[in-house]
Length: 129
Image (cartoon, rainbow, N blue to C red; front, side, top):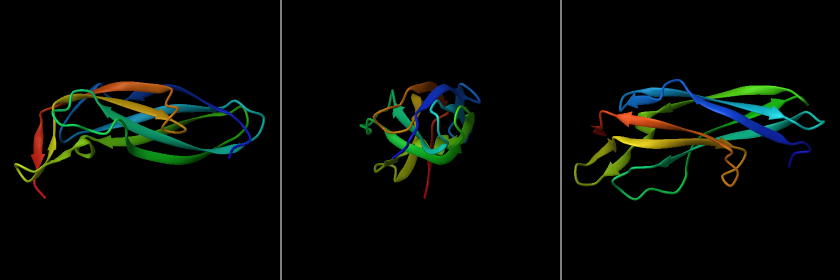
C-alpha cells in the first residue's frame, strides 16, 4: 500500500528492432506526484502481436522496486533480451525466437500499464538446450 500516487511517462527503447541474439534497453520515467516519499514496484510486461503460437495476454519480463521522493521523478531501466521472448517448440526440441512485433508495456500493476512501445524482432532463431 502506498500513501502517494505515481505517474508513468515515456517508455523508450534503445532501438526499434533487435535480432534473436540481441538485447534492448527499456527505460520508463516514473514520477511521484503525491506529497510523500514512497516506494513503487515498476513492472515491465510484453504482448506478442504476431506469434505463430498462442501466448498469454501479458508476460511479466521484469520488475524493480524504487524509492522516489515526493514530487521527484526517476528513470527506471530494464534489459530485455530477445531470447527472453522465446517459446518452447516441441517439434524441434528447442527454444524459438520468432520474427514478430512485441509490445513492451510498463506500470505499477498488470491492470494499469499506461506506457508502451513496439519492438520488432528479426532474424528468428532456435536455441538448443
